[in-house]
Image (cartoon, rainbow, N blue to C red; front, side):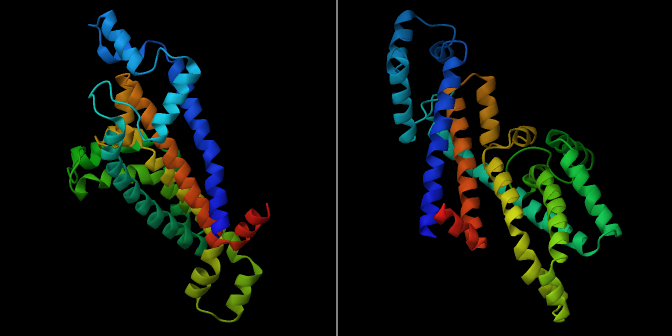
Length: 310
C-alpha cells in the first residue's frame, strides 16, 4: 500500500509542474504592464523602474520563471496589488470558508444522492423511481447560477425562511450548500441507481438471496461495496472542484471564499492574486484526485496490485 501511495504522489508532481508552467505563460501573455496596474494611473518612471527590479521583471524570461517557481515552492505568491497583503495569507483566510461550504454541499449530495439512488434501484418503474429520475434530470440540467438565484428569490426574499446572502451562522450556509450540492446529488442518484441495478442482477446477489439473507444485508454487504468505485470517482472529482472555489455560488450568496476572491481579482486585474488562486485551485483539485486514487486502492486491492506490477 505504501508503494502504491508513493507512486501516486510521484505521478502528481509532473501535473503540478505543468500547471505552474501554464499559469506563468498565460500571465506573461496578458496584455498590459502588471507594474502599471499595481501603482495605478499616477506614477513616475523611477517608481516603475524600482518595482520592475523588485519583481524581477527586467530579467530574461527564463530567469523570471526560475524566480517564480522558487517563490511558489516557498508558498510565496507575491502581494496583492489591491490590498498590499501577501496572497498566501489571504488564501489561507479564505480557504476555511470554502472548505466549510464544500463539506456541507458534499454531505447534502451524498445523503440525498445515495439514498434516492438505492431506493430507486430497489423499486424500478415505481413512483419513487420516476421521481428520482425526474430529480436527476432536473438537477443535472439546471444551471448552478439559476438554481442559486431561484433559491435567493423564493426562499430568501419572498418566503424569508433563510437569509438570502451573507456569512455567519449555520442558517447562512444552507442555501449555498443546496445550490452547490444539487448537481452532485442528481448525478449520484442516477449513477447509484444504474450501478446498483446492474449489481443486483449479478449471480452472487442471487446466491445471497437464495441463502435467505435479510434484504438489507444483501444490499449493504454484497451490493453497495461493489458500486463504490464509480461513486468515489464522482465524489472526489466534485469535492475537488468545490475546494477549488465555487465562483458562481460564492458570488451569488456573498460567501467569502476562494471562488469569490478569484473573481474579484479578475475584475480588478490583480495579477498576483489571479496567479495564486489558479495555482491553489489546481493544487486542491490534484490533491482531491490523489485521495481518490488512494481510496481506490483501499476499496479494491486489485488496483494496488495492478499499480505495483505496472
